[in-house]
Length: 439
Ligand code: ADP
Image (cartoon, rainbow, N blue to C red; front, side, top):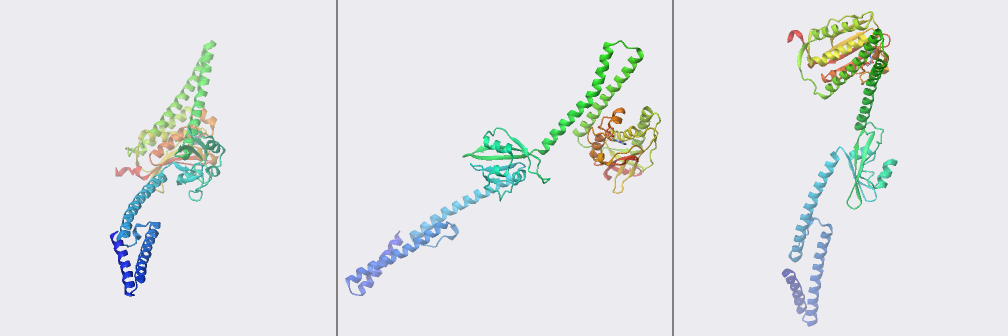
């Protein structure tokens, strides 16, 4: 303030001195006025600089002024700097929030009061098939063209979620998504989308599984209860009684096998994979399952099969012995059950070209058409349904084999030609094998 007053006085005095030098009182007064005018022009220019700078409000470009204007500029500069810092940290926090929402496995869409997209993460854009940049500001109902969704949005009852078909057709896009709207603020909405394809699939598989198990159990139960009723209501000859009891025992056995296979499968699915476990002599495993298969062919075939184990490398394999035995004997028992009596079955171990080892079973049976091969390891999938039933199959054998192989880091392989027999193999990785003489 003082500086401005001094400047004013100085300029007025200068004007007065100039007027006085002209030796006229009129010029002295005029000089004073001219000095005052010059001061106000200069002051106005400074004010303009300050105002221009305030319009842009960038702390770094503050004009360099002295006196009262300089102090005003400095105070404003400090204030602007403070605000700039605050804005920067708010921006950084917003970026963090948005990055966190981007990383969410759920889709997030922010809608304004009239249902236009204000922001969406990439997941939501993928779920709903829109472009997170280009479609900003679009009405969501125009982009998600689904009658159930339109009704949900218009209904205003957001207490529950809805499920709609995904946008397809890219494989990365979900086929089923769940949507729920959460109102917030002034008529704004937060919409969450979730990919429920896997949940739906699991639910469908669970329903199929329960239906299959019920069906498998119902048949022997119906037969059993039928015989029980007959035996309760009609006095039977000894021979009929014995025959009925035999049939009843067969059905009870069938249910037992089914329950036992189901338990095996659920144990395999529910327990951690076996570690290196014990090292087992591959020849001993082979001898065990061959003996079992010879017993089976004697029991079920009028003309027993020729079971000829192939000679192979002398190996130790590592894993869970009971699981390996169960998988191997499932393959051998299938070969016996599906190959007509008198046929040849060759089980054995052999090294694999790409490393590792495999247990294989070749048979001279009917073979399997190519279209069935990919589905053979599905639970309850059967090619020859009647042969499976006749021979006590549960439809779970190959599912068990697949699980055992996978738990040991391996896989199951099938080669088959209709009319020329089949070869099933359990391939094990090199880490599960070592030559017998080395250990
Ligand atoms: P199942 O208890 O019915 O034998 P699996 O899961 O063991 O069930 O086998 C699935 C189906 O694969 C069988 O129903 C059968 O039709 C077919 N299959 C399995 N092994 C053979 C084989 N060696 N030769 C011909 N078909 C086979």
